[in-house]
Image (cartoon, rainbow, N blue to C red; front, side):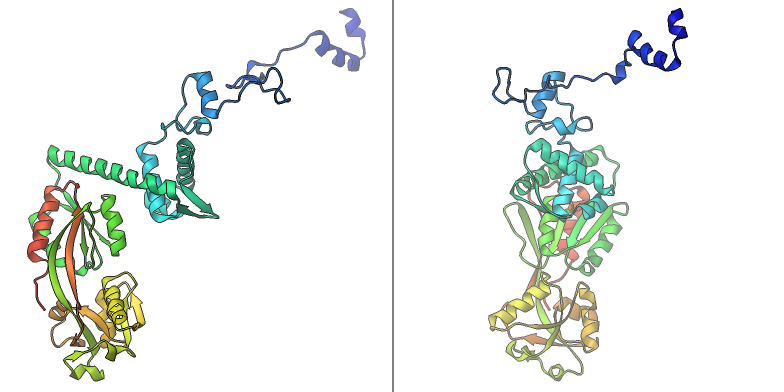
Length: 377
């Protein structure tokens, strides 16, 4: 020891670690991996053993797959512990919007959370559910197959929750309706509010293609459709069949006439709704029957603005007979009949065949049948 003290400081610093080694703390020691020692570098050597998939390696070491939130990267395709309701609802929203950001806005969560949830679900199922191109996502065949079952499962759960809530009593109820034009619901909603003042009402303006999706996912109890909306899973009730008329400005040369043919309208500009709406579908069908295509000079989503735009001279357009009754004979437009077969619309109320309809929803259906729209021009 005395010799050590007499040594130069530099030599002392070098010799002390050799004479008195210190073990590192336990936290700094390398930990064994769950899957055991690494495989030999030489493939096919005498000690080579078959590699295990990530889930099998984890299970062999710990006895189970950890589930979501701990080590999702090692859960294999056979495990479904992460298919909880939240994951399925995230997947459903992304599939509906075909867009991560819009799905996150609907769910009111951060976009990275939605992305991670979908990626985790794909890892657990063992197949991709979306085709990704840059920032866009598109549902593939695997995702479409899963979505059909997820829609049915979540719709049943939502129905069960509403049914149990009604059974418990005390809740005023709710009704949700999708329609192409919301204005026509005003009379029914007024009567419904008078009979069930505490009930919740949700309205969706949607084209007919979106109505089917709203019904399948139980977002709405009813769809009010002016176009055919049928299928083995749907029930329909016809409410009204009414004539569709041609509206023109009072200053238009056709305003002095009572009737007109479709062929005479070949050079006219039309005010119409966007493609897919019943008015646009009917307009294109009538012209196609004559081998023509309509000239649309103004299109939009506000069907209620159509008579004012026509009266201002923007163009002419098709409107249901109920609009004539509402505006009166001295409104902003003049009315003519079209000499064309099938120039009418049929209004139907549609609901899911196996859906649970609350007492509030059944009351709304009854009022719609009684008050929505009388037959006739």
